[in-house]
Image (cartoon, rainbow, N blue to C red):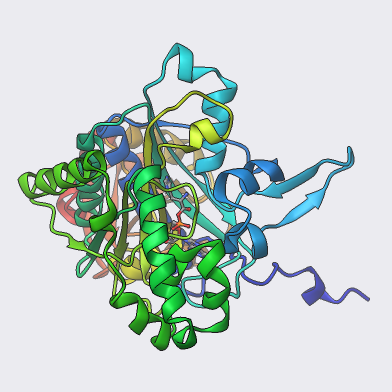
Length: 429
Ligand code: HAM
């Protein structure tokens, strides 16, 4: 006997489809998000890339940082048949830089603007907005140091939020400065935290020497109280880092992108330098970041390439979907064509004609079942209208377009242009 539940999806990993029981996992919502984001990224000059889901473990431990939670606690790592240590990608930036280096682009064509969408894997404790397989839409700009690239990325992301109809999103902005700035700040921060270590939680006490920046975004109240009074990194920035950050802020003013400076925003990956940002919402509880990113001007070099500035972001598709699921129409085809025996070819031809005239979504019921059952299916998949074609309709060349929302119908000539006009009338667009 097979225990079916043994074969069910792994905890924290979701099926996305038209059958989804939770609205945010409905494929119409995902199609809307991926379509909107893809169109927009294309408009801003990003080319799509499709990179492997599995990479050498060392790429992540070196790139993201062995001390981070992502690498230390959350990676799905395994040894393959050739005894190599491989990991499911927990994020997309390290792989993008790997590809950039592998194709020798730093030397031959250093400015690259890429976008990607796909699954990422982190063995975190699943909860609303946090999954073990989750999807990101992300983009990376490699080879550009100018602050206008930072500002344009933030402006594009602001544009994306508007295009998706998201409101109440806060744009949080910070800078981690260049290496020299961070070294100076580290000294100041370690001194400050050491003097207050009695007020910190155990893991933050441990982080004072290994990764003092992470103490700043600890969620515990006592640690947070220490963090809010910590010296500001702005005071430790080198003149060049300060100038870069000021320029980004000025450009955001010009572009009318509202933001708040958040001196506690340090991000959970070690590769960041300079500008960092997160877009957050008050609607998702503790999983409040819908996207995050920043500059990583030292990562290409860290992975063996020449010094190359870079900036990128990634957004969590599930979190976007949770926010907009109720607003996306989950309708089926615009027109459902139901052939009675002998009318299959007329239906298939009419459907083809309509799809050429306009991007109508037209489905022909090929089940060969009874009309009653076919109409039920049209309702179940939420088709917006239907035409039944039988011998009478074939003979007269006329039929009835039924609006499935209000059950009204109109007579229509059964040719592409006439049905197209009737659909426009009946459905609007
Ligand atoms: P991240 O902040 O780790 O950055 O992830 C980006 C976004 O992915 C988060 O804001 C969140 O929306 C989503 N996300 C992360 N973990 C989960 C999870 N377990 N379940 C659901 N959604 C999640 C990065 O990954 C960087 N690679 C971004 C970047 C690109 N920086 C520069 N370039």
